[in-house]
Length: 139
Ligand code: CMP
Image (cartoon, rainbow, N blue to C red; front, top):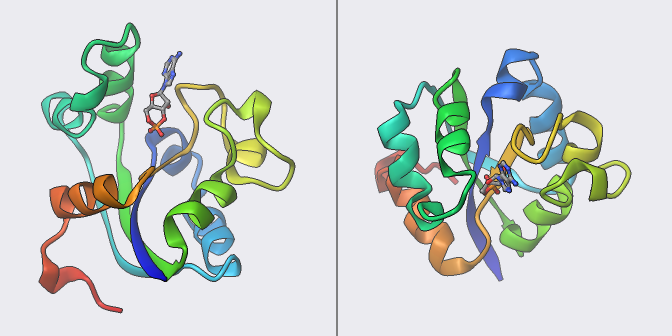
């Protein structure tokens, strides 16, 4: 089925001017960028977005990093977009990511891993509406 998923290009990647290279990976995989904006989150906003990880030992590090510079939030659309995006991103830890994936090529560490992608249809819906209104999604 055609799905939409929420993608974030993280501060480590925007800092190194990798937005275009990462978008090329998505587009070459058949994912269409139907919404996109560059924003700078506060640590509180990052904490709200990652609320599910609140109890994890890396929560402080994660939210501090996500507020450390601009991010590009985007909605990707395509056949099986959620799984396809996860395939293109590669494993969370770049050391485990398959060759050719975004994290294998660009990520610096498990924390500074260049991209985020929704993991399931319900979280995709929630995460898209965290950043975008329906009017901003242009398929
Ligand atoms: P993401 O897909 O954005 O979802 C949660 C993030 O937490 C994950 O990517 C990682 O960047 C981050 N994360 C996971 N494990 C660790 C860890 N051990 N230390 C720091 N950050 C982590």
